[in-house]
Length: 73
Image 1 (tube, rainbow, N blue to C red):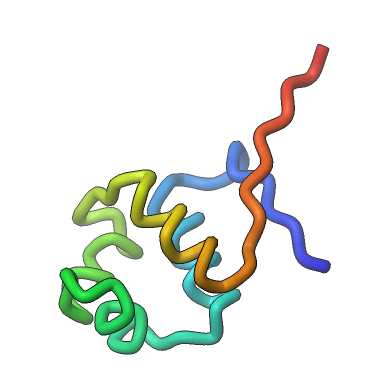
Image 2: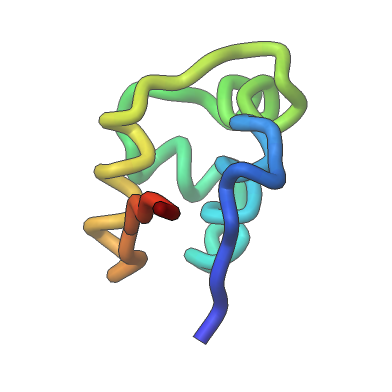
């Protein structure tokens, strides 16, 4: 099992980590999302473009990656 504490990363870094967990290249992920180019994925991963949370949800659902929010008391 691999875990990611998203609070320790910038949003673009978490996007790249999740893509790497899928085993997809930037081009393959772009095709899977049907609305981005490889260049668009690269821009997200380098912090030069933003993405919607729905995009992460879509990728995670397709690749059985859980997203968990936890609050410390």
